[in-house]
Amino acid sequence: MNPNPLILVVEDDPPVRNLITTTLELHNYPFRTAGSGRAALDEVLSHNPSIILLDLGLPDADGVDIIRKIRTWSHMPILVISARTQDEKKIEALDAGADDYLTNPFSVNELLARLRVTQRRLALLQAMPESSEFTNGDLRIDYAAGCAYLAGAEVHLTPLEYKLLCLLARNIGKVLTHHYIIREVWGYGGESNLATLRVFMATLRKKIEPSADSPRYFQTHIGVGYRMLRTE
Ligand code: CA
Image 1: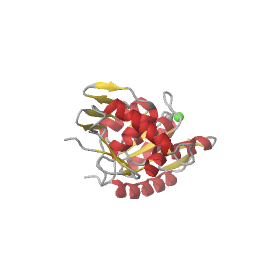
Image 2 (image 1 turned 180 degrees about the horizontal axis):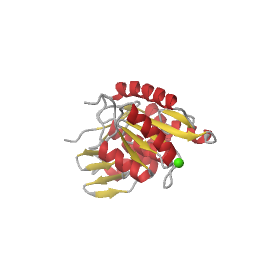
Image 3 (image 1 turned 60 degrees about the horizontal axis):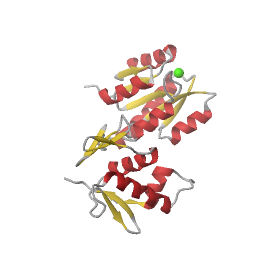
Image 4 (image 1 turned 120 degrees about the vertical axis):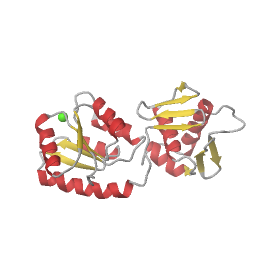
């Protein structure tokens, strides 16, 4: 069995893609390729690669949006490929959860060095389970579609409500502190605070909890934070 991880190469530029795939082939890395954002997400879901090499300039999608999407359900290492003129984009990609970057043009040696670093990171992550779907009682989250459902009916959530729900779902059973939630959902240095979080939790509850008096999904830990409960 090949000990090397499966790599998904997302690149629409044939010469760059060929350089990468030739290098991977030569060094015995199994790989899949995608030339668009849509194809990349399909590949991630159908083949569950271990590492993604992601070009930020794709014909149908912004690479940063793809990172954000994947990060709602997976910690898989993402190495972005950006042009020298795309410094801001690169920072945006790292902020969105990319692990590392390669600046194009890059050498074969740089690519291999980055892959070795990423493989070491991967070894640390491998204990974490990954899934593209989450279910808990009547609640279901389809991470790839970015939608939540309650007993089969779509729950209409704002992007921040959805992000908050995903964070609680990913950490089901674990109490998350106010501070942690605010940092994860709104980021550092935002205008958000505890009062904002309370408003969002109240809205989320209104949309998801079947009864306001006996919470089934969300538990409040006064002065500490919130937890999603496993209902079955
Ligand atoms: Ca491109």
